[in-house]
Amino acid sequence: MNNSVSSRLMALSESETLVMSQKSAELKAQGVDVINLSVGEPDFATPSHIKEAAKAAIDNDFTFYTPVPGILDLRKAICNKLDRENGLSYTPDQIVCSNGAKQSICNAILALVNGGDEVIVPAPYWVSYPEMVKLAEGVPVIVSAGIEQDFKLTGQQLEEAITERTKAVIICSPSNPTGSVYSRSELRELADVLAQHKHVYVISDEIYEHINYVGRHESIAQFEELRDRMIIVNGVSKCYAMTGWRSGWLAAPAWIAKACNKLQGQYTSGPGSISQKAAQAAYEGSQDEVEKMRQAFERRKKLTYGLLQQIDGLEVNDPQGAFYLFPKCSSFYGKGYNGRVIEDSADLAIYLLEEAHVACVAGGAFGAPDNIRLSYATSDENLVEAVKRIKGALDKLK
Image (tube, rainbow, N blue to C red):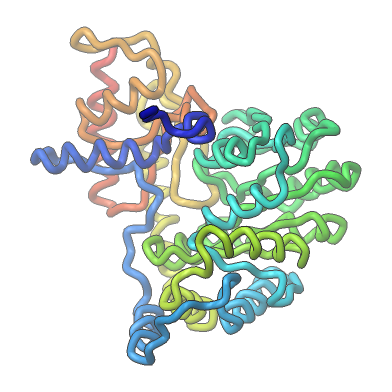
């Protein structure tokens, strides 16, 4: 028997964020005091009114299959959210609810991309974007945006990357892994380019929408000339501290939503019924806890950013959203300690895990080999101690 997996699977890379989280867990299991800054997950509990809605759904026996695109009440709640918070008009038939925003992004890519189609992926990127494009037999076109431009794609870069084979571009704001946030004027610049290339679709990942430190969230979907090519992806995981509930969604032109519905109907069906009721409560209930969490993340960002700035050899930008810092660390490449030489960000991440007992993620996984990603979704005490350990380990490199 041939025990080889499919060529489709062989082409995929393993998620580096999950790999580092696993390595961190293994060390912890051995009794090592590891501070895990590798996971993109809020450390807060899901707000009480959301949990109560889920309990009520269970008590009311809301435990059967739901429609593939999600229950109507949740899709209506999402439409109301888009109108109330974003000034965007959608109808329930344009919403498809899925098992997390991750599935929503993959749905959109699989529904649109044919073999050989190009998808523009600005780097640094979330680790799964290029892999999803590969899964659809498309070609990821990586466009690098470094720390000197705050990790944001420019209109000129976008223009130069578009070809006749371009099918879509993926925009993520606030960004994972950098925390960068596109301003309205920066999005306007991109929209002006896209307006001239009507064959290019836009997938806008807005999962960190409410974790921003600049005020009102700006979506590229606000530009009317793009609406018939726009797929917004969002969900409750990050802003409502609901990662384990696996509840995300997309909003798109009705024909794209219908295609995603058809696709999802064949490989997962509708998302969990209890999670949908919880997500509905998240959108319809008080947003006070969301703001409290946002304020805590902002405080932690200021704390960690200030501490990292004091480490010689690290170059750090000041992110405006999400809960990540993405320092440039290439000045340490070629240096070593105890016979170990740091050749790249992967080496540095392993070194920090083993020497400082701090877990982070190598930037190469995000298309930025000169950087590492640190999540500050943990306590102030952990952050202070983690940066102290990182500084101590980096000071040993000569």
